Image 1 (cartoon, rainbow, N blue to C red):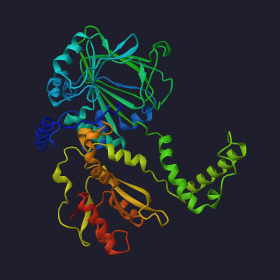
Image 2: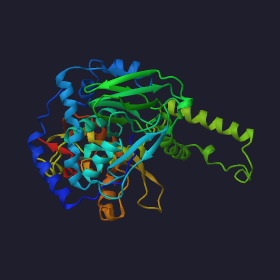
Image 3: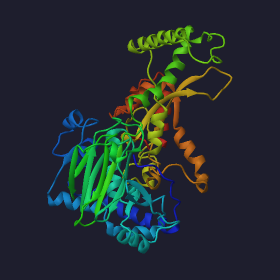
Image 4: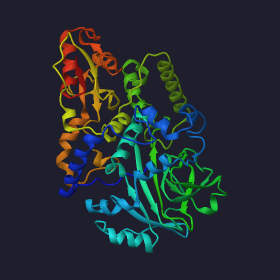
Length: 477
């Protein structure tokens, strides 16, 4: 995924333009035109890779091999061009863009990346001079912060994948290359927006790589694919695929958008997330896991074969407990990272965050709002350290996330005043573990009678729906 940079601090000019953009979105929210379908996240993805079917894509291409879709339809070409143009940079530079944070200037020279950034804010005239005369590639970070259509696309894709979706725009002059051969730790979708770009792909040295790395050209062999992308074309390739791209001689400048996802979203990452909680739960009921270690194990120079054998016994026992349904896996860190970092719902407004409709009663039917932006975690609750740790269920949501800081990493020190509010937000709504079944039923998306929620006490039923209603997450009637 494009590396997260530092988050932007809004200037008065940015706030003014953001407010103007928000007013425009009130009329534009439901008027997206073009070849993409926004009826559902699955519909959006299907329209993005059409005519390839979604099932075919995941069976034949996802994590396996590249997919090239060459299109010549005028409507697709025009839509792609509208997503981001070189000509838009002049206006964007008035928003206080900064080098490194918002964009990089770079060029591949003798197989190495040369960074050509200036200091501080970006001056458009100097930027064009470096682009035209020094043949520098402009790498624009996370354009969904500024382009509403990209916000819409990436928000839908995050719902579809259940994973963060970042983006970068690369604008490269003729006869130039921005980056040397390398591979990424993300699944990559390339949308060619303007001009042409030559792409060369190579066999991975590390399939499904977990980190970014450069690869010297004398080690990567001959390309498996050597193609020219034109406006409207799409190219997908799995993480770990070695690649390099340049604008051919005689062509106009190239603008392409990189959509990227599935960073640190592997089975290994999932196991790292769930195994600590699984062991914690198992230790409560299995005395063998609570027996002390052999003396001096931690001070010895290595781990003996006997210790390895005992660990294998424990692992087989844990697997058997899981297989027979004696325990559930609890993912929390990965879920929290996703929900706290993802885009908010497209075109969400301040009034959408307030309670909607009447106060729910036992006689009312209710349904969850923004279902695709809500998730549950089951985690230890440690309010009272004098008592045994108990589990609680947390309801987390992304309604208050900021589009302006999406995929931009940690905040600067000047943004610390927001930390207390955000910490409270991402702690989420907490309910007793006995409420888990009722919450899962509500999040199924069906309209339900409050009185029929699977809780014994009416006070618990009302407390649950009122808690969600006050957060704008539930509607009655």
